[in-house]
Image 1 (cartoon, rainbow, N blue to C red):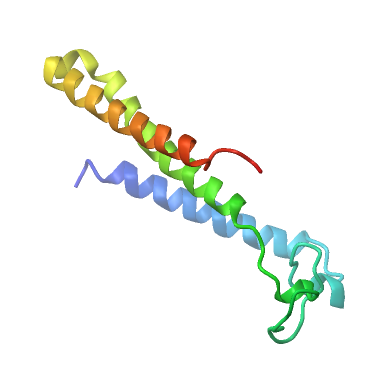
Image 2: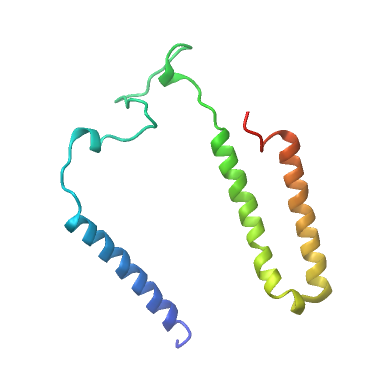
Length: 126
């Protein structure tokens, strides 16, 4: 039980800080509300109460490029893979040859995925 106490205390402090911050912001924050502030922000497009089935001339019903979302997903995937390098770098000497071979295979795997995305054009902004 003694080993979990610092983690529980840290969790309690984080939760207390979160609740305190929300309460303080609600207490001293601006209270002026108007219709424009209460509307959902939709990237400059006027929000409509229902979905619009648009044709070629209707901006609300047209397809939109998802390049930003694909790039964000690639960043998340490669970022998570690269995070695995930090523990290995800290304990590289203790892992020995097995750790070196495992990390070499991991880097080859990441490099193949990176080369595939680059060749496919997933990293270029058209």
